[in-house]
Length: 158
Image (cartoon, rainbow, N blue to C red; front, side, top):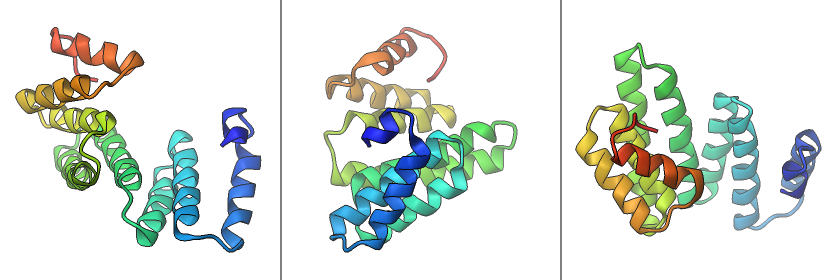
């Protein structure tokens, strides 16, 4: 993670892959796959990110992996704005994953933000607002908080 934060992503990926070859416990493998997925997601390589997140879920159904896999679906949904069928299918997949993540981790404000974004993509503004308000009550911070507050005052969705 330190290498990734320093921008040395290729080196981080190499070390994560080496770590997968070592003897790892369940938590270690989930963390490695999840981190590799996040690197791919941040680089816009959605298929690769999905493969890593699914590999992590095959080891253990961790809420973070469910959440991250939902982010892949939401990213695809945003990209498919002109194709209503694809957009709705991706949002539906994201909602299923987010509901599972929320059940496992009910106090995570990031999950509530993603649920709000999913409902906003479907044009279900009242449900989006409910989830955004819940994220605020759970302590979402930073720029995301500012964007949610702006949305609740009438700005376009996140």
